[in-house]
Image 1 (cartoon, rainbow, N blue to C red):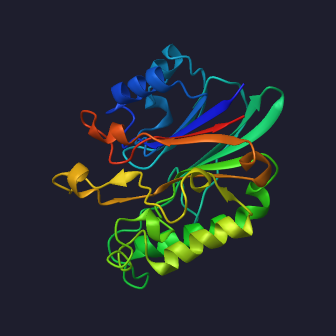
Image 2 (image 1 turned 135 degrees about the vertical axis):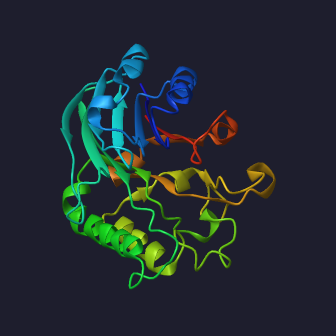
Length: 265
């Protein structure tokens, strides 16, 4: 049977739990990975996920900011969380899914956004983001093991077709050369395969995020691909489908990100 994994920056899981319920009911992924849950572990709405059939959880949260979670209909036999840059700001959680006797490790990341000014000398948030990506690179020998997947809001659009205008966004945080080159270095060093781009050519526009600031995001379509699904080569060969649920951006009180689903056979 196929295995479907979804990733979604939900921008407050408690505020948007009805949207999560709708998504789970309509799409029924085996595993859903959330970012920006914005609540401590004890306040996470586990009951809603249990009712929907997602009775296995790995949660790493904090009050009001950040936070990541993995919810699964399949058993999670191991869970872990890593701290980056000496800060416990709830940006990583991992779990091993027992899928038909095969252990598949899922890493769920929420990379720092980096603020507005792309200069690490004057913007500590951007410096933090670059340091975070450097630590991801250093961890590749541990992360990029056999049958592993990285999902999440990596907050970087690495390819020219990952943004609505490559030239206009070269000085905008999320698409500056120092960020894109850093993320590509992590991907190449770990021999990670960009699963989304296995199904959409690298020169074709592909977005997962549209700003709240846009008066009509559907008309302008000024998006960016900030959400990603990477897999080790052995798993990437088994990828049979990928979908960006763009319609979710028009749901009532939506997140500015939409769900991404990847299916492995």
